[in-house]
Every structure is written in C-alpha cells, then in structure tokens.
Length: 160
Image (cartoon, rainbow, N blue to C red; front, side):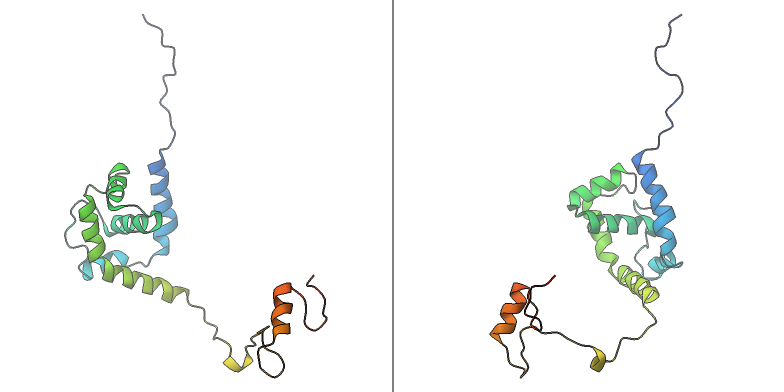
C-alpha cells in the first residue's frame, strides 16, 4: 500500500474573493440606505438581470470601476474572475449609462444623512488674513517679502 507523504486534511484558508465578499457585506452594505435595491427597480436601472444577481452587485462593480481606474476590458475581466458577473465590458458600459439616475439618488441620500446640524458662522465673524495687504489696504512689498521669508511683520523675526 502506498504511503502518503503529504497532509490529508484540506487547507482551510480563505480565498481573497471570500474576504472581499465578507468586507462588502459587513462594512459597506449596512451603510447604504435601506431601500437602495428597491430604488434601483423603481428608477428602471435594474429591470432585467442579465449577468448580474442584484443591484448590490451592480453597485460593487461600478465602485470598483470608479475607484480602481480599470479599463473597460479589465473591468469585465475582474468581474468574471471574482465571480461577480458574467457580462462583457460593453455590457458594463451599458449598465453604467443606465445607472446614472440611481447613482445620483444614492449619493444624494448619503450626503443628506451626513450633513451637520450646526449652521455656518455669519460672514462678518470670519476673519481673513492677507499678508500682502498693508495698513492702508494696498499691497505692500514688505508684507510680501516677510510672508515669503517666514518672518513676522509685527516682530520682524523669523517664524519659530
């Protein structure tokens, strides 16, 4: 009987695609609006699912294209390699064109949720510093030289 010289237990390491799927579902999807998938159907972006399983997969592919700077061919190949979609590069371009209203809605929803509640200060309370203007409001060469050399106009010393 032959003797095996290698381990018989299968390796339990996760593939990179599995790790990306976990990060996508645990970190990004919870931050999106609850109705983003239904809104894709309402805006007629995701009418026929040809090669894509869900609007979530469409968003993932579009974000990968925008963030990684893929060419259209590399974009299509990337999606096939990770098992995201089985569509061509030209089909991805069509999805991108049709997804424009949905993406605008999604960005608007995300920005509306992140706006601060505090108002901006009144314009008269803001102070602007212009090192090139002297006391009379004219541009001064001395102020310009002091600013460029890093010296303080009040003390005549270098910045520390």
